[in-house]
Length: 439
Ligand SMILES: NC(=O)C1=CN([C@@H]2O[C@H](COP(=O)(O)OP(=O)(O)OC[C@H]3O[C@@H](n4cnc5c(N)ncnc54)[C@H](OP(=O)(O)O)[C@@H]3O)[C@@H](O)[C@H]2O)C=CC1
Ligand SMILES: N[C@@H](CC=O)C(=O)O
Image (cartoon, rainbow, N blue to C red; front, side, top):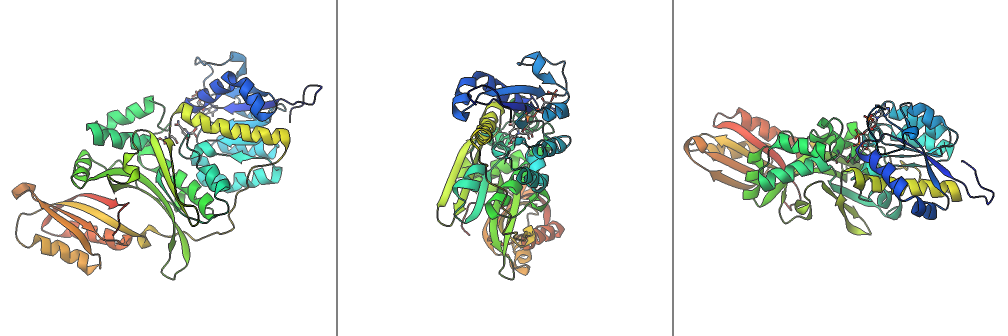
């Protein structure tokens, strides 16, 4: 802790690693709100330095605060809190670990790192008796990590599900509402500061899976990593899927679903999964558009809670970072610490194969008698019952759409594979899971 002033007031030194979409907004707010931050923390907060890769780029911060040596910045004695906004695993992992080991609290928005290494970093924080906060790592501006870790600490959470990636939600909403082009909308998400440095993380669901791992770990007191999360992105969702969804009074959203499920032996497990899903237009998540996110939490005693707000972008994410920074700074000034990682439950992870899901399958079929019976036969063989069938078009445009009842996901996907082998099915053109509906 940096000590200064005869009255015992101390200055809290902050190092910001990264000055991109989020870091630039954090630096701006620290500069603009210095007086308010001082009042809220109970001591002045001083920016000691900002680490970037490219020193030659123009930045809205005094040149003498900039450095391209983040390790040296983190090591400074007058730094009490390290705010990591570089992204990626290396060198962020080592910088954070070193900071924690040296008694500095850390605030990070780096979900990719946390989804792999929370255990290691939380242990370093606990050993050094400092804070590791990461509200901004899930759903941008929306407070959801702290409510789960603190407000609901006395309840039993059964399910945390929602839209946690702003980029893909922006793309899917634009495609559904205006018929916008996928690639152009992704590029726009990059310009608006929503997308990751490598947007594959967004569109292939890695970012949402990392967030699901973080949410599931907190909600179920179990260490869940990104590898435990079943993941499917939106790159295979077509404009036709969105048009077809509308005909069913549905829309398509990339959902992250974390829930307690029962294994075949009745034991409790954690299912964490990310996929594009068809949801009814009447469902609250269907109205979440653009870069907005929403997370629905179901807890035994609290019931259903819904958190909604901007899930990506520099300023909204910076708001969550600043909230954590103020908490960490208050703890430095007044003593105390935030909550520790809780993994006492250590529930096993359920395979997607065993989780009951519903499928929506659209296929191009031969226009001849008996097709429906053949298709229905494949579902019946695998004990998957059909909830609705729609036949559309004729001749070369003949299509069959099947919606199933809930059944283990393995049985559903085996039905799809079998349909692909049927002579009367020319092409299975769309397969989406259906969520937010009763069976
Ligand atoms: N953008 C968003 O909406 C959200 C982002 N996040 C997370 O916040 C973090 C930052 O995201 P974002 O601001 O969008 O990322 P950017 O890519 O816009 O910014 C990254 C910054 O880190 C700097 N940097 C990267 N590597 C190094 C290095 N080795 N040494 C020094 N500086 C480095 C870059 O320097 P330079 O400028 O010189 O290239 C840049 O200033 C990520 O973990 C992201 O996942 C979380 C929630 C929302
Ligand atoms: N790329 C992410 C940024 C926030 O986490 C997203 O689009 O949600």
